[in-house]
Amino acid sequence: MKKLALYFALFFVLQGCYGQNPKTKSNTNESSLPDTIESGFYSVKNGSLTTEGYFENYLPVGNWITYLPSGQIKKMEQYKEGRKDGIYLSIGRRGYIEEQAVYKDGELNGRRIKFGTSGRVLLDEYYKNGLLNGHRTVYYDRGNVIQEESDFVNGEKQGETRWYTQDSKLVAVYQYSGGLFEGVNRTYYTNGVLRVEQEFHNNDAVGFYKEYYQNGNLKEEGYYKKGLKNGEWKEYSEDGQLVKTIKYKKGEEVK
Image 1 (cartoon, rainbow, N blue to C red):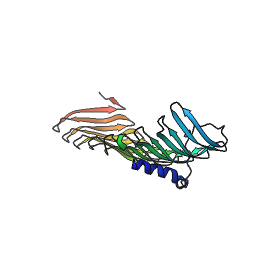
Image 2 (spheres, one colour):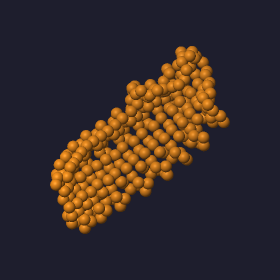
Image 3 (cartoon, helix red, strand yellow):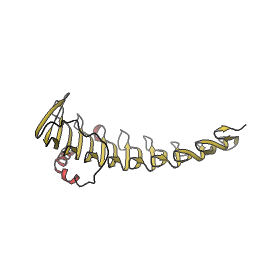
Image 4 (cartoon, rainbow, N blue to C red):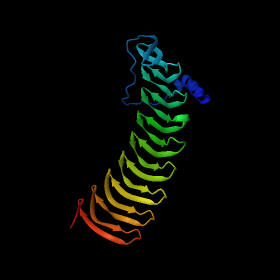
């Protein structure tokens, strides 16, 4: 609860600090609050929830708080000239923060974190101009165990993305450019041995393909052209002996 109290303090005193962030431009729908209240305090019930805050010149401004029927705070957000601007907090019934984010001019701008039970981090990501920008980490809901690590530029995956098992073993490494596969993608057995490596360009399988047995020996190899098998494909036994060769053209086996 000390941590929650600290967030409340930050919520009420840091609004001006976040006002220095650059302007963003996404299309987030900001608020269902009415536009018929000129000025003053406003309170409205939405089902079992109650939302309270202030209007100025027909626009919500300052701190707005949503309460549960028990009076416990469910949501805290800040508005400037009718748009979310500042710290946003969503709080669960047990008193733990479920989500914290930063808005500027009505759009996500900065760090956004989602929490699971007992305050464990489930998602840690960054936004700019209302789009994902920067490093993004997804966690399993069982402690500080990473499920996925990736990077984004203007809302699209860029560079290397890694996936892990619940016991932190690497299972896949994919390469992206502009949100599309670009480069060599690799998957792994849980013992760390390479399972498949395959080349992509502009999201299509283009170039070599290699698959391995769990003992590390080559299982199958060949090439793709424009997403289709092309040329010689070879299959091997687990002890490394060539067992079959098949020729392909535009994905069709050549007899």
